[in-house]
Length: 380
Image (cartoon, rainbow, N blue to C red; front, top):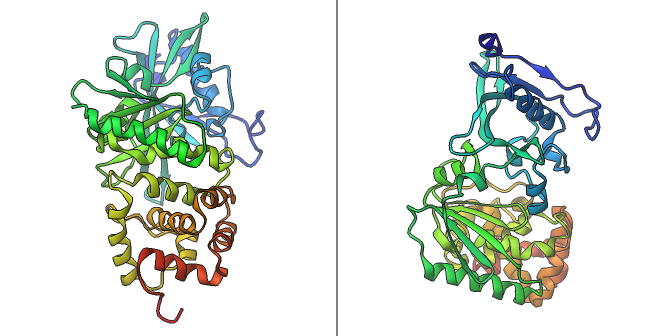
C-alpha cells in the first residue's frame, strides 16, 4: 500500500472554491515517489497541506490552517509565498518527521512546469514548510524560525541581527545600519520601526536554506536580499551593511499600503541604501556607460520595460534612484514623499515627477540625464 502511495496522484480542487476567482487555475497536488500519505499522521498532514494550497496562498488571506502564533507575529505569515506565482501543479516529495524537532513534520514541495512537445520539466522552486501541533491540532508553520533556532542574536537599537555561528559578525557595520534605520526614518518623517529582525548569512545558498528554499533561481548573484514579513530582512553576501532592504522597511509607510510603483520603491531604496552592498554614488558610472552605449533607452522605457540586469548594474533600480535624486534636488523630502504616493502606474509616476521637477513630461528625460551628469540623447 505504501508503494502505491508513491505513485503520482493528481488531486484537483474544483474551481469556484471560496476566495478563489473562477478563472484561477485549479491546483493539483501530486505525491512523489516513496511519500506515505496512508499512515497517521501523514494522512492528516497531507490533507492539511493540500487544503492550504487549494486556497491559492498567493492571495495572502488569513487561514485557520496556519499557525495562529505566526499569523499574529507576521501579517504576511507565509514567508515563502513568492514560490507560488500561479503555478497550478505542485508535487510533495517528502513528508516525514523533522529531525530534532518535537511533534513537527517537514513537508518538501516541488513547484514546476512541463513545457514543449518534449515534456521538458522546468522547476521553479523546491521548498520546505513544517506541520506542528498547536492547541491540540496540526497547523502549518514556516521553516525560518526552526532552522535558525541555534543562530546567534545581537540587538543594536531597533535591529536584531540573527546569524549562523560560522558567520563573523561585523559590529561596526551593524551599528552603522542601526543608525541608518533611525536617521532615515527621521529624515522622511516616518516612525522609527520598533523592531526589525535582520537575518544574515555568508552566501545565498545558506540563507535560502534557512528560509526554507532548497532551490530557487537567483542567477549569478552572490549578494542577495529580500524584505519579508512585516519586520524582517533576509540577506546574504553583504553582511550587516545591506541597507537597501532596511530602507524598504523604513520607507514602507510612504507607499500607501503596498499600492505604490514598484520601481519607485526600489529606486528610493537604492538611492538611500545602495544595492548589492554598493552605495548609490558608485552605482552611477555603470549606468552612464550603459546609456552611452544604448542611446535608445529613455526614462520612459526604463519605467515601462526596464532592461535585464547585468552583473551589479540594474538599469531600472539605479535609473529610478536617479529620478528620486532629481525630485529631491527640486523639492526635498516632501517632493519625494509625493512621488512615492503617486500610485502604481508608470505614466502617472512620470507625470507627477515632471510636475515636481518643474518641467514638461517631454523634458523630464533630459532633466534626469543632467542629474546623472550626461548630455541629452541625440535627436531629443
